[in-house]
Length: 302
Image: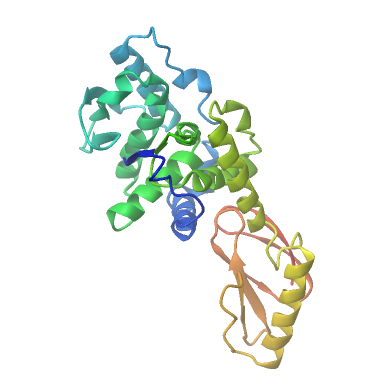
């Protein structure tokens, strides 16, 4: 796992540069686990399960937190052996057939124990994805997949809470930006009716979550969804007129929908606001559609 500890001259990257990959990761997760499988993670890991006091024994405490993450991720027969050594990155895991997995944490976690749970959550998710056979090509995209799944399945809020930044120094664990962690966490919050904001101990993490949540809200306010804003509905109506006048013409770049002609009339395709699977519905006014992947009922104004 990447470990970003930076000086004021080299700030943490912010914003949403990996958003397409993040959305693809959410879709891939639903496809691999199914709707029922994802719903099995409806409750996040409780803060008390990842708590690590200074007086706790380093190794026994690390094993305790690792077991809690293993249980949460439904890996009952995975035994984590946690060690510490000097290394470039924050942590690493040896992926084998199991049942024992060796996790190594950076030596600095010996004195930064509050973030041990964050590092372990990412590494244990690597084990889960290994067992599921779910991976993306390339190290960068695969690590983004891991961060996304860690967060969406209820343990990645620890990774966001490990983000701290001031005028002198900064720390961020993982490959996603803080705002992207906030985005995925908000997507999870919407799906499971959960409010993670009371769990943050880092003010910077809370700020990143609010920015990510604002971006996630845009997903449920894009046309042709009925909750779209006035400007979006107006542009959609214009594009729909063009599609009716010129069947088969390509859509303008940047719009979140595409019109398709067919023997049954015009249809519009767009990404599900929850899992980002493409959904196609007929263009005939008010339509209610159910996503075949995550079962979300989408109220549309087509």
